[in-house]
Length: 447
Image 1: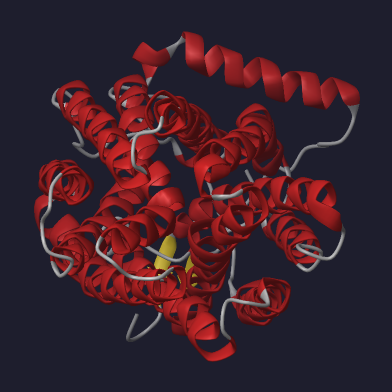
Image 2: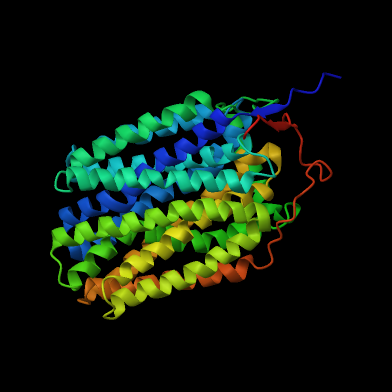
């Protein structure tokens, strides 16, 4: 019998490098997805068409990664390491982000679709690496630190807009891409993976078919993995609402500000300041919720976060539908920030709790697949709602307020679905699921 593999040592440098990547990719999602690309679309097609056009573009991008996520995850499980997958997806995202605004309207839309799909693909490899930089005892804390530090990347994205201005968005896209690339390098260089003790070929046709077959078998045999199917189904609804509100937050804020008498330029400045407020509270929320995950468990923590989202969406909808003063936007932003920090701090550890160790990539592919499915449906629902309201001459902020109420309904549905999910730690060896045991993990001093 071969000797057991040496323990996997988790170093502080490895943890810090993993956390910094969270900061790096947040620069992209805040700067491109949430802020400046939606404003570029608004400049290109007008305020009346911006919601429906941007919703459609985002839905197409998410549809691509929805199809590819499980396959990519299963392939990464077969590979000796996941890092090459993360590097390729990041470089692809950065390259196409650099093209935004430089290749005409159609070319820029295509470049955004590819860049966003590549970012989403990289995110699933990155999330799966949480298992490489944490143990069961500190997983919530490490995940929460990643969320908290990650949202500092939003300061960089918003700060670039405040410093450079939003008139030349092409230049903003370039700086955001470069920042993403540079801050990704520590993760590429210093994160120590556990490694796959039984790597298998991944690019042969029969291996791709096997990967697809494994994923289909997992979906069919959901009862073998207690709580997994219910969690993934419930996750569709709350990520649907949250990803959509992230994507449209800037447009909504601008429209509300204009309805309160501000000019377009003033409205864009207000949107940036509101975003800064949300980011500040997201940083604080990430650290706090991560501690709560380790203390009370990921499921109870997620329930509390969803309850907070109900309050946030209710108040946000009233901003567009009533004459609440503009300062209430900052209250909404604070609540949304805390809730954003919490959703990812609890969500990732809960998924790992439900995942056998040797199928992390495949199961995170499913995790991201349902997230991407929701990201297809969410913008589509938003676009339809906008067409039925704003498209029929309703004021933009009022139509968007109705859209937020639709998102609130999705949060409530998710809470009901998730009530019966149990996050009790699984004994995967006893269940026969740890088929290729990876080295055990030990913490370096101070981690």
